[in-house]
Image (cartoon, rainbow, N blue to C red; front, side, top):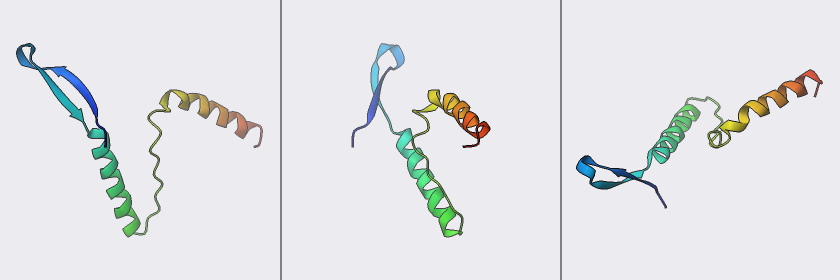
Length: 72
């Protein structure tokens, strides 16, 4: 598994390599929440690709409104 890395300068100009795994931690937490909801008889829907599409969301929303107005 490859990790995205970010080079940050530390104190007094010393560099340190920081591995960013927050996205994986959040994914695991979301998966556990979905499993817990399912065990309680609740339905779930996992949407994991919304963040990269964020700039296009307003355009998609406006298109869906147009489709609703046209009766589609």
